[in-house]
Each structure stands twice: as structure tokens, then as C-alpha cells.
Image (cartoon, rainbow, N blue to C red; front, side, top):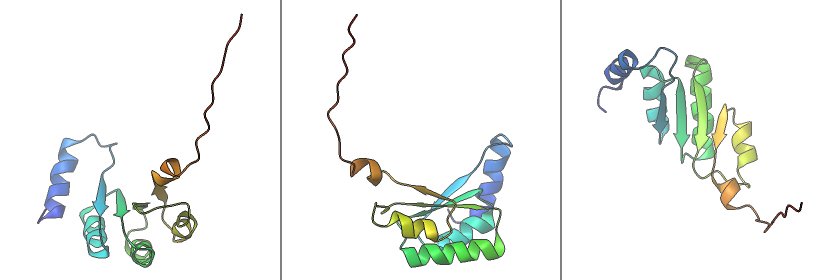
Length: 110
């Protein structure tokens, strides 16, 4: 989208005032554009930890009301450091995909 700010104005006109808009970003420049355009939530998708930290610093300095979410490449090994970066939310499927499964059954007798 070339003019993200205009796009966001159009989106806001068409959604309920209580709705939140989340923009998925792949790098710091996209994070800056999303914040400037007025996103409620900015997803840092598949970004390296150092870039996530820069996004948090930028958000904290200029747009503290915007929520930051980290997603993509989040594993049980990296989740703690990502949480320490200052993001507001972390989404991951790997904690489910990497889990050890137990075969369990239940019988009900009368």
C-alpha cells in the first residue's frame, strides 16, 4: 500500500469505532509507517530480536499508546528474550507444535 495513512482513514470510516486495526510488519521501516498511519496494534512478524528491540524503543518514544506484538520464529528457546524486549504480546504456534503429546483416554462407567 503506497499511502498507508489514507488507507487507514478509509478503514476507520468503514469499521465500528470499537474495532482495533493491526498491521503486520516485516521490518523497522514498516513498523514506523504503521505507527504513523495510526494502527492500534503493530505485529513484528519474523523480525530478529535486535530489530524488535528497536521497534519497542521507537514505539515507546513516539507512540506509547500502540501495542506491539511479536510473532514468527518464536520458539521455546527465544520466547523469554522476546518477552524481555518490551513487546506487549507474543503469538506463537511453536509452543503447541513442539509440545510432547500424551495419549490419554477416559472411560465413563455407570
